[in-house]
Image 1: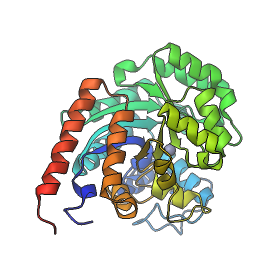
Image 2: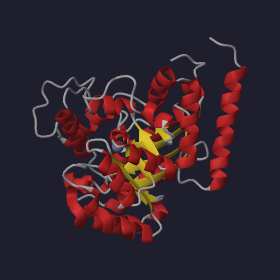
Image 3: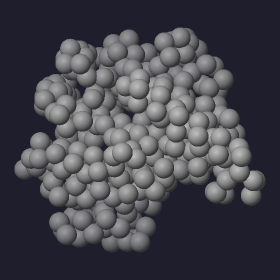
Image 4: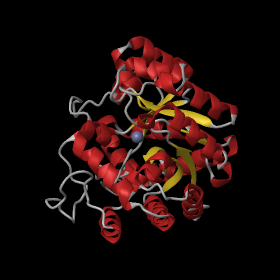
Length: 344
Ligand SMILES: [Zn+2]
């Protein structure tokens, strides 16, 4: 990535980034060692390269890595370190704003003794150290696999943590076995508490799952969403309502083997009038970064498209109007500076 590419210079916005999936590889190995946790869940980790612990071949192995990462994060101090290193990595890449996913029901599944509020305080405290260069908010994920009752419990707990920068809820996990219909009450309650609502959909399941996330859950943005392309009426729904799709190119390539490397479906979605944004999903586990994802997009779709997607992300964020204007001004300045700079 050249220093004069737009991807290298442009301010960056996280709208689809899992904090736990941002754990640095060496920190994962160190924390796993400290807590006596293997580097793979439910499988032998003796063959894992400790210098490259996130290398995986199958989707199942990815899930086992995510589980092992969750187990290695054992107490609030570990989460504080995760958030502190996340901030260092984000500022180094010129990230200026983020709405980050966290998965408290996964935390307590693997570590039932964990004090969730204390952990949230540890995370929010570290994230606030990024100010004023960057501002981070939290979107706790309800995790479909734990079912409707657990989802409602998570919403109730998180609605009481808006003082810790919780601004909404998200829905991830197995969208085939745990469809949107199960979570109507949880999302309705979240909305009644003034929380924003987003959902992963149209990644493993098809276009109907995207429609359900919008129509049944009131999702204001869709994580991934590219399988909306299987039904033009769902693409139209997203485009007409201006519901952004959070596209994560490397994540999709690594977990969805049927996807072509190029062109990624986001190019078609952009052409169809959808609001496309770009992010890294679980960036360190996918051995990428938001800067690298921006670079991939600049290479595949061009600098103008990348600039449009970053502007889309500012617009699709839940930041206040004044904060959005300030972010746009920082983006304008970076773009102007790049245009004035000599080409390398
Ligand atoms: Zn995700």
